[in-house]
Image (cartoon, rainbow, N blue to C red; front, top):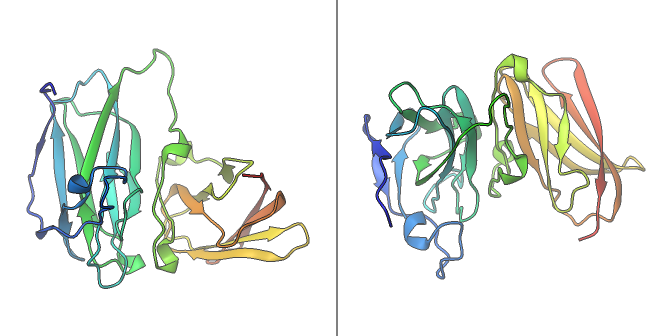
Length: 264
């Protein structure tokens, strides 16, 4: 209930205010129904940004964005959000729980951070929407650099193959990590960190120890660096060991990682 120095500017025009965000009827979503019900909207071909102002230049910030939409004709409202050169994707289609978080964001010398947005065109998105922004500041520990807790990055289930449960992030090439999966052991889903070159297309295949395919999904037009994919098989899996293979379909390379499935 106390005012802060943090504010927000709208330097660019948005195409419209979208009043068709999904609601739960009992405020059981990640934000209250009233907060989820509206957002700023851009059509394909447009791009906009907002500026968060009044930030402490001695701190780092975790910025979480949320969006929701129920009137997208393609059943896809995937937006590409960009902060300080980092890019992530969130699908707003009937979303009540998915968020996208940018960790350890440093404001500029004036205490500002820009959040840019445009549609994720290769996924056939109808709109790009910005509904909510959560700002969390923290003082970095001296001599250390914290990393993003990947388990807090979530995205909703969506309808199209190229963006199904998909969150993408990019970093500088010096920070590119090998193929990783977490949590491991996993339960219902896991996050798969896929290193890629700009424009890579990959096929993710998950098999059991007998070689039977239980999950297969294409992901297209990846970014340079680390791409974080949310993998959620459509069928319940028994406890045991599984293998995930990532095949780069536009070049001769593939990677394999082993995972363990635990009981609920």
